[in-house]
Length: 121
Image (tube, rainbow, N blue to C red; front, side, top):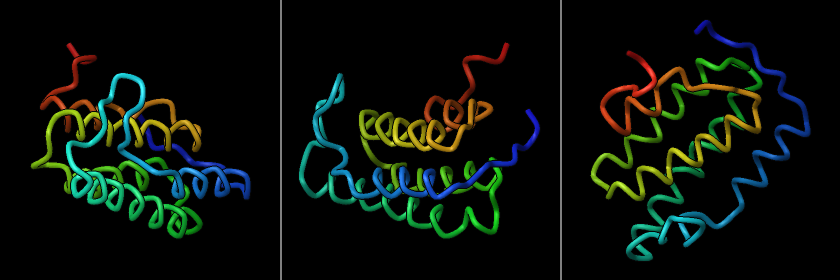
């Protein structure tokens, strides 16, 4: 899928900021929460750092490709974490995509999480 130009408004930045200041990796829906507070804090910091970079960088690079590159950079912090934390990190990426109006990661999240994109034949 081609790159996408994003409409970064004050409302969009406000919504990203709201997500930034939420407590993360706590028990919710089917996610049981991080196994320890140390893991939770490390995971939360990785997501928050990515949100901070997006809040600054989207002004200069309001593009889907920039956002996906920030996702992949952030996900490096989860390479040695349990599957549950990896899935939850991808859930935060999906929330960012929703805020920014990005419909698909073009398989980037599935490929990182599962090693392949199950939507591709």
